[in-house]
Image 1: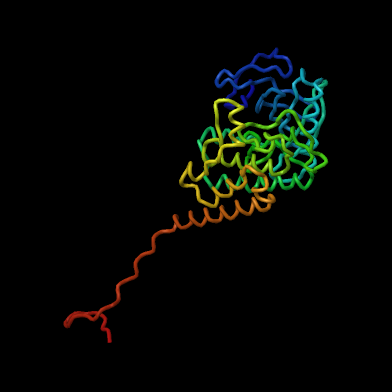
Image 2: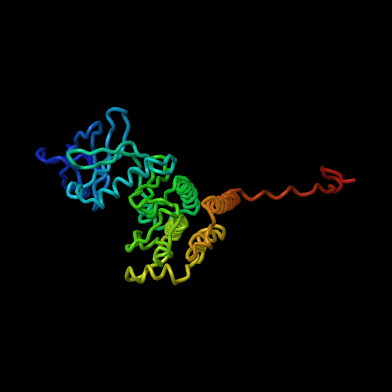
Length: 336
């Protein structure tokens, strides 16, 4: 009997399953497998599976803590491009120490399969939150934006750009702290590290216009993608949409952005304006630094908090009437 990582039900599975072989949960369909030992890690359940590999919830038997283990698929272990991306992700994340960047613990391989052990952040992702709730409260979006902008600023100080900011790459731990993950496309931010690429590596819904125009990208491209992610979270819809990928990426270059407050009137002007500026078509029209972007988001957050405070405050009671001269024969206060 094992616990399903999806619905957490206890289910029976065949005892003759091969290592890492999984079957669908009989209740929810989430893949389940027989727990196994991998070095000092005990793999206990599957968090997610994708084209490149599987992420497991595991327990570090040496340090007695929960971790996530990301294991590359065996059939991809000889793909040099995939391996380079996996190594890049491990080294980039390991070089950064920030509360809102997922921490890397170790990188190793097991029977020819590379794996990465890292901090566990399995309490939802931003894309699932959007999918479940439609759109997020303004204050929550501003908090996420402030923290992820700070994380990207730290990466920039270490000469790194993330290059794939999107809701799926922002996870949350049990304290609801956002964690930036997946540095597989990361590269140096200095001018000498920039080079022409024939392929646009980005998610079309959040890609910066300069990448589409094949211009040199820098940290402002990540800023655009973060703002596009915040736009999606706060409005419940992506900044641009189209029937085809070609039309979608063309919209980033040519179509004016509908302000967030025009989509959801309740969004306060400072929040809407900060997201709009960070999504300017030309990089020179965006904020000049992550500090500026973060300060704009913090100022907007202050206004939202003040507004909420005023709404929560009860209406003041009217003052008592002025004492007046009592009529003759009645008790009361006399005014002189």
